[in-house]
Picture 1 (tube, rainbow, N blue to C red):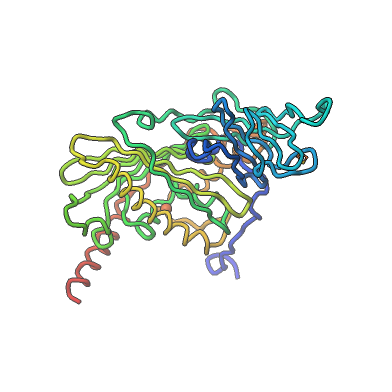
Picture 2 (tube, protein in one colour):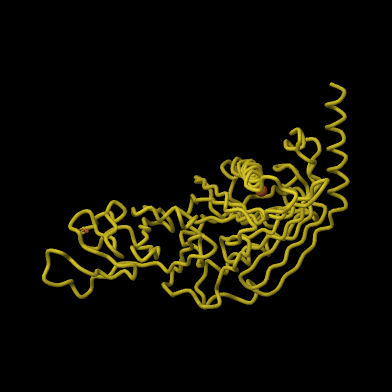
Length: 376
Ligand code: FES
Ligand SMILES: [Fe+2]
């Protein structure tokens, strides 16, 4: 059979074994400052994360170059991590600083050290398979509210996703239709812009009247919609300026959606939210927790899909779908050597979906669901 009768085949290559070049957020910096070393599985290997006496957080290869001791089971001594096996002391720069029982440190006593960045109370680590340091212009934007008194602290969530490559979550940035079917809202406006290392999703959404759980809580003003400007800065860290519109007022928040790969088939998903302490909010922290818990439900719904879906390199798209292929071209820039990044991966690309037809269909479906419930 050929032509229109031909069965569409799912094509897919194995997930890349290489890990994306870029800054990856490991979580809240304070969680690494409890005086003990932390074992982190990331980028297909074991790492040790520890804060020295000077307060700087360091990331090193997890296994000691002497006889392979696990540094995460060692002890922080001054600014160094001491191996539990024979007490060799490793500094944040990856060099062995001393061996208490030895006359001198071997010349080549150096292990892998990972550039770190602490910003907005978050800890970032730089991954580059080519081993280059982060270029000065490859940064994560400052999040104003994160360190300001008139905003809440981070409400932060961490979850491990097994059985999926992190490309699945990045696909979300262009996936308009899933908001209706997987989440509790649907977009009335949806546009993507890709340029350089930044991929943006502009969205206005309304809640589904037939499915939105918080609309049923007593004493809570009805949420009428949201406006979201969400950008990935590099392969894994998304900042979402998210405004929830309630009947009586707006709530300004910043949502972080970030991840780091554990292996080619698993990743750690983290998300966090801060909320502006506006005058009309009695309990901004409570609001942030409530919003965070609501967002968690959304991510759990995504996770259920990812765990059971097929990896697909040739998605079959309709006119109302977002630019999946262009997004993946953009994403590819982080998986090739830096000298192999092409203009196609980084040049500006804009695409707005016409939401007229989807909105007609979705409003009708919502009304039908409400009517069916009322009559049962
Ligand atoms: S294995 Fe680490 S000090 Fe010997
Ligand atoms: Fe989603």
